[in-house]
Length: 417
Image 1: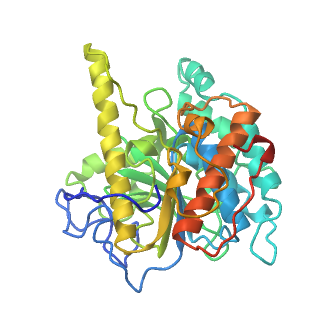
Image 2: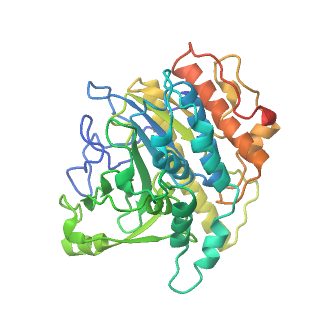
């Protein structure tokens, strides 16, 4: 897909801050947003822009492994260590969570490449994606006083986001400024309808304010980010409403305090499946790895009431995602910032970089149809997803970011296309 796409004539309102300000700062008004508060459009290039940001989209284990392939290529280029910010949603957050928890274990050589990336990052993530999580969590969630999101959180804490000393990683353990990327894990607040962020600074929702709590486990952030409704959501999180700072953008303060006290969080993809809002206002370069499910065309959709509601839901979700993609790519075409987008449904032949690592075919097209569940994937499927994320990242970067880069090599040649 590269940077070839149209823009929308009627941009959507958003909770983005003005250029040159903290990306987490809320708008100044409630209900109506300033004229500059639109998705991507109007994000003019400015001297305050600096650094490279990477967004890892949602899409279950499929997105986790596709995103792993993208990270693999960035690491080989020596770009992983220099990333200023990594945002993630749902399945992409599982990949980002492993990277964040194990960042200090990476051994970077003189070129900036982490030579132990396959062992430290790829191996534990692949092992986790080889075991089904979703239906087990859902069944346990049927037990009184047990939540599916809580079961998922326990699984992440036990098998995915442990620190080198064996302790469970917490938000306060995320890399400090200057020592690694600023990791932002996106969820959605079901009470405010806004994106909800977990970072090394704590919790943030522009309608509620900010809470500096670094003791929250990284597994909690992942469980919220990947709390796909209705079965894996909501994740319930209790906080002390008196410790939140900044005036809430909710007129009824008592109502805001009740929400702050007991948060109900769902999958980050409910609000934005690419997780780009913390990037396109402040970063000089924006890279987006998108493994979200492509829209399915139906010649004869079911017309019963329940099926119609499901189809309408899918259309609404697709239009929101398509709008964000067009805004992002429109900004890239207008040179408001540099960067590139690659999606699991992208045809590698659309990129100008030659020669590509592979050609489009039945196998590459089939990868976009893999379920977006947290369901076990066999080794061959895993390696194909990783290779595909790697190949598309390679082609996209060589076509639209740095044409002098040499073609890479598949991480798993035995399952090359």
